[in-house]
Length: 120
Image 1 (spheres, rainbow, N blue to C red):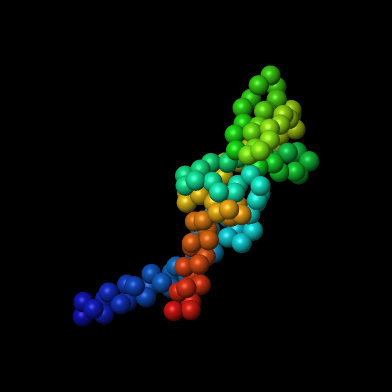
Image 2: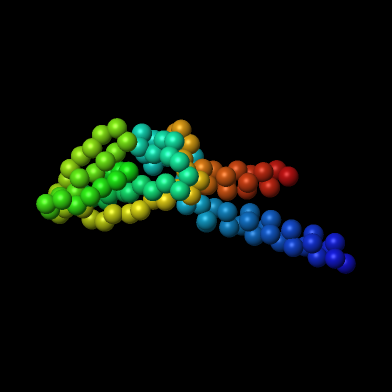
């Protein structure tokens, strides 16, 4: 009887995981939002997405407000933009970091686990 409960619990967990894996992915596991700036970030890293009023998005690693503008730092460059052009600033958190192509490792782990469970 105890063995049956364990099997039912494991099977239920697998079914729930398969059903909801796509909804808990923080990022797209296949395409990087910005390959140049997000490549090879260490675990527990933070980046920021500056969304401009014209619809453009800029991924930066750090920023600061100074004299009515925002000075931002990318991986290999820096820049400055007026504060009025910014619509919102979104924080991107990478729990497991990113790979050398800038893809989120946590999203790829969840996605790969789903495929492995389907095959198994």
